[in-house]
Length: 249
Image: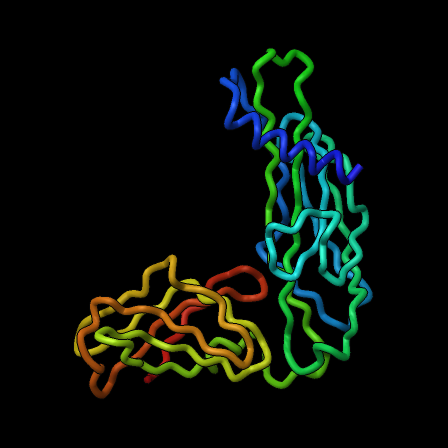
């Protein structure tokens, strides 16, 4: 059955490029929340989804380690999902249960990120025309596996980032260093110096992993900022909300 869903997705992509279509089957599965936090002490974590569409949907779920091109039958994430394939009726909900099956000893010093994939395949309408495009929609969501006893507080992880301005060739960039045990998902970054603001492009703002650094280009900055420079930034909390903070360089 897993291969049938994968085949449906492939066919949808093929049809999109080769036929003139008269209609479009829209997917309707909505996942509650924007991320999943999995504390190691929990035996399982529940993920709720709802079909807001007018038709039932066939849903397949799997977890990978970051390679979005892996199909469900080659998923490498250390999790068991039940049910892996399910039908969700229109205007109804379904709960996925996530169980960690990996080696906890391998990740006791810091948080690890995996990716939840939810593939939503709407049914073909009973009265479809000969030329009809069926679209399968895949959603991806981060899973933060959080071992017990990590040093620090995940709610304050972003406040502990270390910031610096670094020259890169003829330009400058701002560097965020994460010395903590938790991932920090940034939403916006702005350098304030000399009465001016220098915004990092939204597309360049990313997540900073534990024990690593991330560089953000500042193409409009022409020199090292003086005394009193600061960084204003937003990050995403465990609940998917945005939190604001400022830090001196």
